[in-house]
Length: 199
Image (spheres, rainbow, N blue to C red):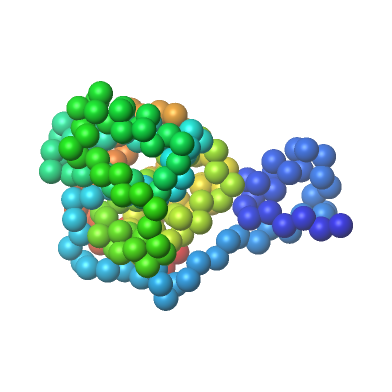
């Protein structure tokens, strides 16, 4: 009788399956704004990912992008929070790319710990190949952390040029360029951070 979609992207996919649009209601996911708040003004040279270590999260493209980033910004690190079946494969890829010492696989973390990671990072990245919504993006933005995400599913409904950058999925070159552009825009970062929390 009634179907709830968490994003316009998911609603479009649902109607494409033959569900009448009149049966759909779009209600985005929500987050705890008390738990996810901006932290220190000075952030660490840290790029952050939070999520399951599975193929559709696009992490191999993030690792390849980080290889490009580290050539220009060798002091930066990537923290990967979460677990999943791709963990061993991703660790091997980091080693083969020569960036293992710059990549930390943190494992599963509590919501309180994830909040702290988001307060430490300069940038949050969600390189998904498909994504219904991306609630983790809202958590990052609420923490005042600008985001880079892919143009899939509900992600474009969350990320704009006011709070970060969108890139095509499965494109490590475009992702690397976006990361470098945002990490290099130090004068613009405070405004991005303020916009993120406001959004």
